[in-house]
Amino acid sequence: MTKQARREKKSSAFMKPMQPSKQLAEIVGEKPLPRTEVTKKLWAHIKKHKLQNPKNKREILADDKLQPIFGGKKLDMFQMTRAVNKHLK
Image (cartoon, rainbow, N blue to C red):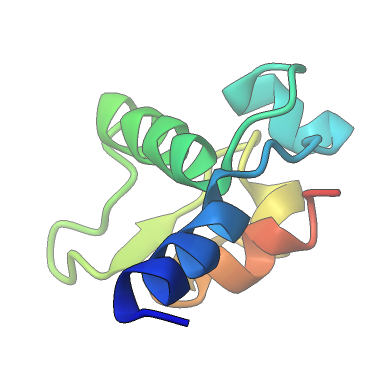
C-alpha cells in the first residue's frame, strides 16, 4: 500500500457521516455529518457564544447545550474530541 493510499484510508474514517445524539443534534443538526463538520459546527457555536475562557483559551466553558455533551461546566479543548465521540454513532 502506498503512502498516499494509507493517508486516504485514514482520512476516510473522519469523512464517514456519523449520526449525532439528540443532545449534539441541538448544535450541529440532526443529519449525519463527518466528524470534521461536527467539529467545525461545535467551534462555530463556541465562538458565537464566546465560550472560551478569556484567561485560558484552551478551556471551553460549556453553556446549557454543551454541558450534556461535555459532562460538566468546562472542558479542555483537547478533551473535546473524546467527549464528542461518545455522542456520534
